[in-house]
Figure: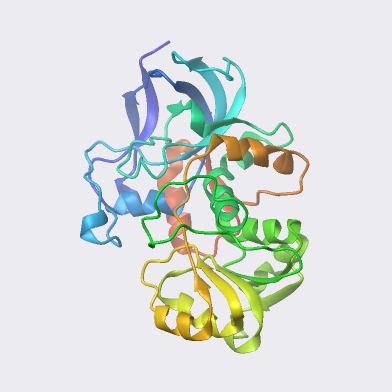
Length: 338
């Protein structure tokens, strides 16, 4: 086997034009790692945040980064080789993973290539009922929704708040999902519904049939209706858009309710939340092969569906990032590897 592979690398921070399809050294699995021949790669917001140099993060949170850099965390593929001390995986098995997140924030995840070395604890067997493109679209977004809504799955300190995030009961509750058609949002709709909640989905009008098909009980088109003026007495708001605008949803919640901003940086409603008796909580998604194995049967039999917005060959990663920059993504963007 050649010691080189094709990969998408960048040699400086920048826009999509910084991404280059070129030769790169093929990784070797270290003890505890599995070498995966990559067949599909899922795109996620941290990809473009890193590509640009994490400009939105406070300076003290910006990791030291060296070039050339290979982006990406989410892969689906086939085990090529296993490192020492690895059990549970063998050459030829189909697998999927979110690789080294958040510890790989400086680019150590390196998924945009033909091969990637994955810690065995981050890896899971791919659900047989879906193809590699759909499997690659799942890990980060589905784990985010699962860890926010169902099971945190770890005891690591929370870098975003002093207290550990705690999911809340969903059965019989009313859950509003803002940004419901996107990667995390479309999984949050499905998980809340699966766990017995009544789900209100907020998205642009074109997404109503899509979200109704995923189980949304009510749809709000934010282009014609202001959701925070239209609903009250919600038990939980999952804001998959997040940021500065999340505080507007506080008035939709009943006392004792909760607001989960998926992107909590910039949230400015802490005092109002206390006054209203509302919990605001967030966490940072973490790689977890055991949870991906737990989620596998839900993906396998279609109880959880991965929606694909678009597919691009690996060599067209720049075009895939340009598609992401246009917004209004329905589900996930994936790269496919020949």
